[in-house]
Length: 190
Length: 304
Image 1 (cartoon, helix red, strand yellow):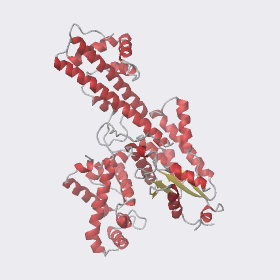
Image 2: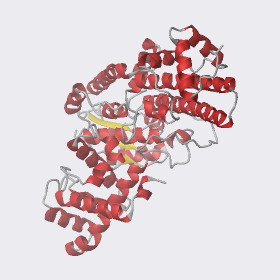
Image 3: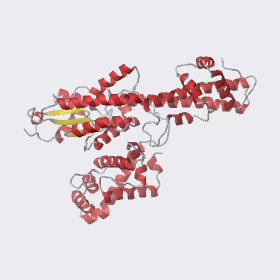
């Protein structure tokens, strides 16, 4: 199968999530996807929403603020899901990342998240393994933090909870990781 | 020492036996042995660690993840089939799951049952324990290591929040250690029979640091709630403060007053001045000094 077949826009929507904890090398993978002109999320909506909430509050988010933030991020994920109508698209994180986010703060999943998880289903989920045993990243020190490993575990757990069977992408150069991901994709029905 | 290293042989055997029981039942996990339920990794993943169903759900997710990344890759598919984690054997009886697993591993089924299956169970038990090792069960100060380069954070909301959380935890532990330093100084001065004024000053410095502990505790609670995140047991921020050592019991009003004056940017002189001006502040300081030192000496003076 060649890349053109995969990228054929005249096919039903195929939605794939690429996720993982911080320092999993997600940014490098998405950067290369863009270079290769493979349709994929640009930026990460949650980051801008996070900044806006902090700016509005004038401080770090607290217990009472987190649910509202989660809802805003969920709305952005749902909007991004629905915007995609045809062909292949790689999402920078997906709706079930919300489970990991809530679990990080010891919160239970909320009804809107569970409902969105049921309604908006991705075709496959790729989890980038942490780069902590891979010797080429600036943020290697951070990747070894226990809390970062924990975030990664919680994100993975969230996808299992949401009924997905994630495909783990080994730590490697971005190009090889993309090749690995593309090799898992089925040929689209035209 | 890691938690797994503290498990004795009997405990390890028990854990393997409980994994074998999971094989018998197959997925989904509807019941789990006490050792599996008690794994820190399971308890921290569970939405409600006091709820058995929640623990079973957390164990199942953890189990699926470990099966998906089994150390012995050539057995990975067989292990998934055996546990019923693969769609083709999901909800099937053990005999069917075992037959499919043996075929996938390339063994005759009896050989598989006797020789390979026990090894798979041992491996899964080992991986579950190892995955739990990273989770601390008791309050312990973050372990720090020297770094060769600057810390570079990825532009990621999870990383930002993890950094915020580390800041809060480090502030809390930092305040607790600074209080500890003052408490042991008070104890040393008392032991050495130091002058009353010197002891009173040390006690006042301990009160200053105690105020900072209370402020850091309040800040943690506001940001993250009553329990410390990512600990297997329900550790509270107050427990971290308490680990500094014994401190006199104060009233809730006094605690609130101290927390309000516990700005870590504020120096000792500014703190004592603000406390002296606050309603009830002078009395609080005198009560603290008396309780902490057991002295009511005439040369103990209010801080200036």
